[in-house]
Image 1 (tube, rainbow, N blue to C red):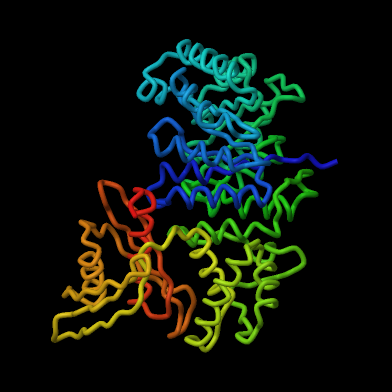
Image 2 (cartoon, rainbow, N blue to C red):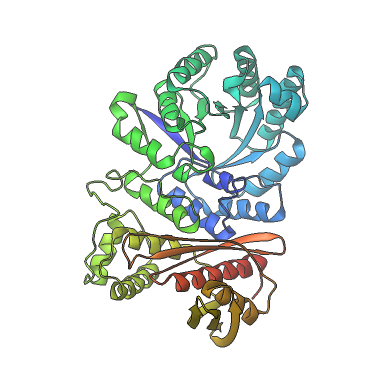
Length: 474
């Protein structure tokens, strides 16, 4: 009988630490929902005690999840643990996660603790957390550079204090697969695990070994592994890890609960709202259906056929979303000679997490050339009220951004701008990413169009709408 390995996704946690993952509250909630839809066993969020916004985000996600375990990290002190529990107490399944680095250099320079102090901290923090929450996880960070005997002492103390999941992390990501197997095997043989204790492992991808090390850890007998969508923050890729488990289940004598037919949905969702590349593994995306992102799509398909096609890609959308995306598909079909699967995925990824559209693009006219100053005339709709303006700029996109800021009457700083094609060819969809800074915070917006200027304008407006939504401005 195959062992069922639990999959923990750390994407939401990584969103708090990786600057490339600048996503909004609504986007975090959408990612959490999708992760639960594909049967992710454990979903780990960022810390709940870093700000009021982080607390509200974790608390909202906790009230949303119905099947997955909501895992929230806490610092090893009573104040952080109490705040964390307050945020997650509404979850159907809740877990507090405490971790500490155990390598000598980190204990000395990061924790400023001796070994006996670390042992006491682990015992006290987990014992206190256990009085609030039944499910406690402990992770020994930087374990692969730590003393084995000390790791054994720490994990035994964590278990005795009440942690039901204990594990290690290869934080520096410098282990090779043939080193991981004996390391975990020796560690497990030195620990007395009962049937109620789960051993976990998290790899990092500094040398491109995260997935290989994770699969090796499964082969060595761990019961839980940590991944993230598209391998964000140097984690093992969720898509590649799950696909490997699914493909080599017999060799691993293990399987997982993830719905591989729906796996692509989470990958494309994150790709649509960040600049992180879709990390899906082709031909394992849909059970019995091989879909390639460069497949041509019948531009004449009706909405019922379109719905079936979208479902075959691994998406479960509402009737309203299907209608909206179908309208965009028909509009795109009029602009492009050929429409590909990747075009549809790009549209779905962008539309799935739209915030309320306070501002919308109505029309624009650009005058530009190498011998004239670029001019942009733009009309927006603000809650259906038309607003127009004209501005100059250093190029057509700069002029368009200037006039939008002028129309809105807000002091918005352009922080970053990126433009890339979604598919190949002269009529390819252009995907623009705009990051703006307002009140010290950065908001990312994205736009799609066969016209790169239009996609840039749409991305800027999208960023502003996110900012208004997050700031509570209408």
